[in-house]
Amino acid sequence: MNREKAQRRFIFGCLAPAVILMAIFIFYPTINVFKMSLFRMGAITNTSEFVGLSNFKTLMQDKNFLEAMQNTILIIVMVMIFTIVLAVLFAALLQRGKFKGKTFFRIVFYIPNILSIVVIGGIFGAIYDPSNGLLNTFLEAIHLDGLTHKWMGEPNIVIYSVIFALVWQAIGYYMVMYMSGMAAIPEDLYEAAALDGSSEIHTFFSVTLPLIWTNIRTTLTFYIISTINLSFLFVQIMTDGGPNGKTEVFLNYMYKQAYGNGAYGYGMAIGVVVFLFSFVLAAIVNKITDREVYEM
Amino acid sequence: MNKKKSGNIVGKGVIYIALIVLAITIIVPVAWVFMASFKKNSEFIGAGTNPWALPKQMFVQNYQVAFQDARMGEFLFNTILVTVLALLLILVIALPASYALSRFKFKGNKILNLLFMAGLFINVNYIVVPIFLMLSDWDSALGFQLFLDNRFMLALIYAATNLPFTVYLLSSYFRSLPKGFEEAAYIDGCGYFKTMVKIMIPMAKPSIITVLLFNFLTFWNEYIIAYTLMDEHGTIAMGLKNLMAVERTATNYGIMYAGLVIVMLPVLIFYICVQKKLTEGMTLGGLKG
Image (cartoon, rainbow over all chains, first blue to last red; front, side, top):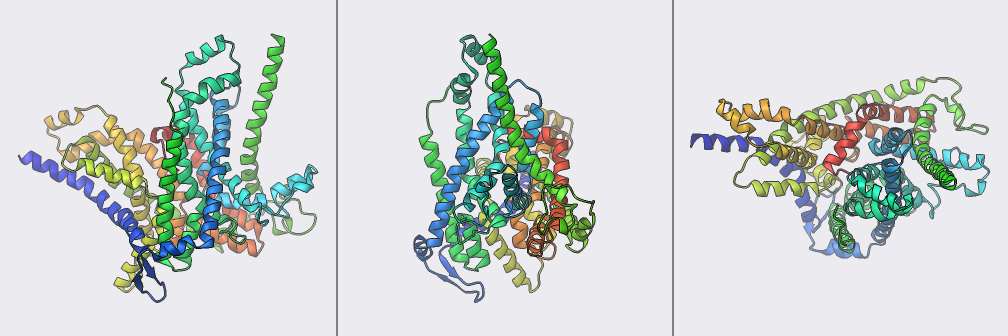
């Protein structure tokens, strides 16, 4: 009996600090996001007035928000497609290929993932600089002057500059994930394919790709959630939504409204919509990619 | 046979080219920043300057100015302090919680597990403004500033917001350990606390290392919480952002790149030392974007 009491006390002592901290710094702020989205709040006047769903109604007619939504969706789709293709390709090369220097490439490809977003912003500032940037001066050096652009200034190009930076950052991370999936494929499948005279490329499509399909599918959800988050941080550092809203994304607009503008209620309404949007999108993608899984 | 061989060589060539192109897009810009950090300002601005040229001298003064005038030294100190503090906090808090969650049956265990899982879905970007408002409310209630711009608070918030991920990883490791270890210890007269600290936690060492590596990178690189909550006692990522904004308008590029090097060099050295453990740990954890 005494022992049971001691055990209960021990469990309580172990869990209490973690639960209390999460309650204060994760769950209470989350509840506040939802609660505040129903209020009109002023930063200077320090007033708050219950307005029901009015913030959400305004939001649906807010052109800036709709532009941010378009941009975010474009970024998610492009980042997802390019990163999957490149990460799977490089994972297959490094996992299945027989050549020297595989470790070196793996180490290098993962580097962008460990750098701070601020550092990446600085690096791409150096790459994209219109007059002295690495990209433009390189293009001039190989006599492709026609391809030079103001990468961070031209309204039609700037979003692709941000997308390129996001893909650059993401490839290594997803490559390592797919490599671990490929490492689990039994070697005899490849031996059988080789005996059948299957070419490397054919083997890739008939053995490797189907067998890492579950891996790829799991990462689709990661792409959606992490691109919504990372596009915010990249845009915050690189363009702050400019020029003229051309790179505005969901969470940067939320942050601007809430923290910059002091429109806390409105900002939190954006947060709620984006949160729900990411869940719905993840669920849809999960549903349409649901297909028969090959058992290993 | 011959045809197949030459096809192989072409294939290999294509593979190498693809790999090398990607490697170049990573290595060249990073190395270039190191090089540019030693250049004088006259090597950046004006006609005839070539960004690809090597620095004419090792202009170390860029670092001096960045460290002192731009206060990067101070920010570096703050970042080290906050990172170490947050790592200590997260271990002290997450280890017992993970242990209790994974090795004991008790009332409410399921609900608590769900709660920690739910935490995984809440990204800090969504809640950073409410956290700011909460701390600012606490400060106004006190009548003076205590919670905002406080390095200890920042470390505590870093630890708290990364608890779900850390507890998830640690508790799944504890779960994988064989049952019965504790029973033997109890029979030997070991109490619950002593059993945990002396026997179970040392056994979880591999997962503790993984958790430390990932959290180190998260805390060191973290930007948006620090940017929102801190002012005078900022971290290095924040300091770099301000430095970049200031030096770009003042066109002091050398100092800006020196700042970039100061932020990324520790992380690069750290990464080279632990890269194997890090990528192995990633597949163990399976997430963390």
